[in-house]
Image (tube, rainbow, N blue to C red; front, side, top):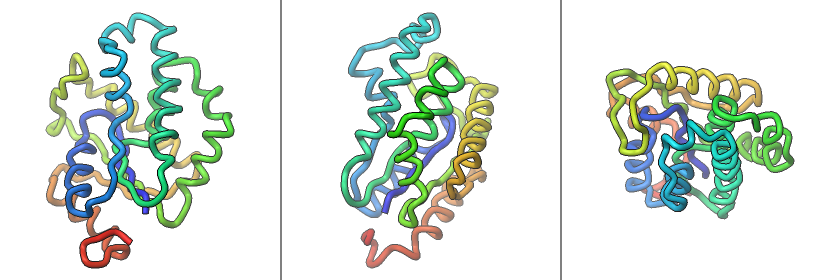
Length: 189
């Protein structure tokens, strides 16, 4: 089983991932963009001012996301290639190029498998908080990415579960309710 929490920045995806990872004790794929920023020691504000650098950064996120998810068996992922494509479309000129790759086409096929569960976590202004990566909170930017992700999910015909409540407990209940049909003795099968 592959579980994805997708959505714009600061929506609570990582919180949900942490809870589910602990509950079901399965491997975790962290947010690739944060990993790359840390590895390369790239200040986020420098990306905004350097078009070549943002193109390179988004392309690396695209391919790293695919690589990180190439493991066999179950995992929980904080984001997906859908997120990467949304940010690529918003911030670079690479969207068409990356969307047309064989890697992207194969990835989308995998997202349509019956053992894949995508939870689309929607933004709420009251839940936005500074995460130490972004220089500021951007409600309008969050809404734009959210809309792009929804459009891509629909364009690709990918099944997803919408999580639009602001209550963390309700969010957990939604996820656990969906996953309960595939859980035996609190372990993923």
